[in-house]
Length: 285
Image (tube, rainbow, N blue to C red; front, side, top):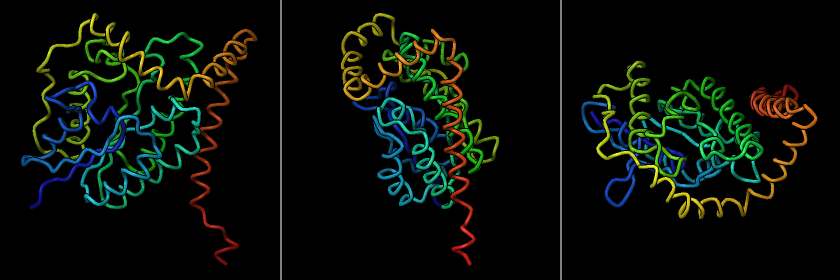
């Protein structure tokens, strides 16, 4: 019998950023791979820092299908929310295609929803709320499509693990070793409950100490500044416009309209996917 094949798709979270081992990253997916079966799994990590849903569809998916995975994880979407080109309809279409392709090849699909980057970074409310609204939209799409494609879905967008700083790396955006281990343990539990993980659960105990507060401050003053600068070139002009719109609605007491607008966009995106599945009777005839 051949080993279980596990392929991980996504961005820096799945790449393992925040869980350094040697000169590279390990991360939750590598930790999970060790517990999928009694024998070591064939693990391929295609995730890349900065990846958006377009990158997963165009670059990672073909490579993943070529591996013939038994288990495939797709955790992506945060980087889409950090771009001025954000379009929840396009995100939904890409994720639907990725999920469908992997499950059509018989892979057990793992997905997750995530916390929004604005709250994790502690941005001011007028800046954080638009990002949070976008992440909620992505999470709503991931929820719906995970159910549609029978994925094993991990709810990781809220809870004590989000506010427990000991679980996060100095950058405040990626889990530290403890956080990655927690994700691996939770995914393993989902797989074990479904009868798809027969190996031992990953250990939740870290091998390295959690980052100190001074390490976090140093990151914000050095690498954090560069991280923000790289994204500001693309996102900041639009984010400032969104913040002004946010403040204007709050002053008028109409903030609920922004939430309703985002919800309507999600509904339209999902409805468009459903409509695309219905054949045109005129063409069939």
